[in-house]
Figure (cartoon, rainbow, N blue to C red):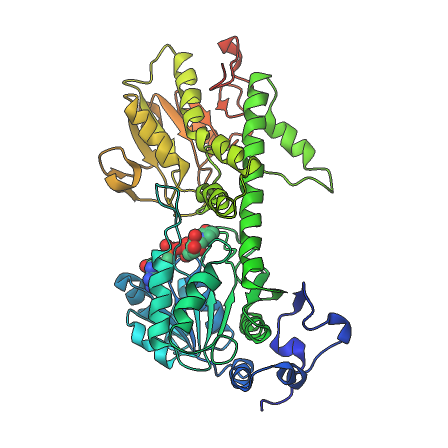
Length: 494
Ligand SMILES: NC(=O)c1ccc[n+]([C@@H]2O[C@H](COP(=O)([O-])OP(=O)(O)OC[C@H]3O[C@@H](n4cnc5c(N)ncnc54)[C@H](O)[C@@H]3O)[C@@H](O)[C@H]2O)c1
């Protein structure tokens, strides 16, 4: 047995239980109380190893989700092994560098040097590990069906090397039922039983790239295990590295938590995008409205309009929710409508640009449009599903010449944006801005100086309120048109 520790030493500083284990009213639990609760002797051994930091931890998929988690587990004292199919990512970790902006290279280098963190492309290493957290992508196909191929491949690899006493956690954003229907089925096909021989839980990732306030370490982690021991083990593991853990009664509940969070964002983004268009038609500044509304200390949370929803998984949120609902015979209305509103935003941004050019008696065809910011969110380098890519492709389809500036995205391969050729980011210098007919701010990275843009650009369209209403000549999404343009119209309206 490990030396007796208080629960506070070994578990998260704050642990919340939405179901009856353990009842917080029982008072503080010691490490041995905690161990005594376990139902299975195999679980007790693994829990001892987790509490003593002797458990060998594996992370499968070292992306925006997996690498920060691997670093936190290494920081917590676990020997952590990352497994990825991308040899360049493995090489980066093993040479002590970081390719994820939110992860400090100094952390990767320190943990790599001390042996706390290593990476490999060899899945056979799973046989040596006690726990595996699966952080592989789970995107949606053009057919609006989930693509679970990476999750299936990962689960098959784990099954091949599964051994008694392992804890497996799935983090990939998937629909309710995935953990039980896919991962559990593949793992139990080995003959081993969940809750008796191995332990399985779902814990949705909540990463917010570029957010320095809420990181992997201080964002509460929701966990739902197949059995109580599964939840306990996963809570103990995450609790060693993450400040707060919320245990729910099943993987399905944890999976639904992720869907609710995503639906909340999709619906509120749709609402505010719609209100922005309404305000624009009514000569009201939506940004002023939101800033005033957010002073309400209860019952309101600000969301901001933009060229899409923003966020890596945001555009697929509505697809995921709609698909899940339809699987259970439910026809979601609100979520579908919000998804449509959000998906229409790139077209409306192009109309806004066309209106702005029209005010200068210029057609879109033949105009040169310089896009400031193509990443999906402020200060990140992720372009997956970024609405900027669609805006650019739509402009090219209308005959515009498009260039872009984004210090986080040096290059845009032709395949990434559908404009038929590779683009390189240009520096946002006064002469570059002057040469463009219109500079359009699509992602408001902090490095962009809005005053400089307005000072040098011939025409500015601002979809993020980066210019803050200080310069009346700027075309801002959701705000009154510059004064010399006469009648306003709602883009896309009849
Ligand atoms: N990044 C975000 O902001 C974000 C937000 C919400 C949800 N998510 C979800 O989190 C999950 C992971 O996303 P991410 O952003 O970390 O993805 P990512 O693309 O940054 O990283 C995934 C990593 O997994 C690796 N990989 C793919 N298939 C693999 C396999 N079979 N075995 C081992 N490695 C494999 C890839 O090479 C890559 O390094 C997804 O379900 C995603 O939808 C991410």
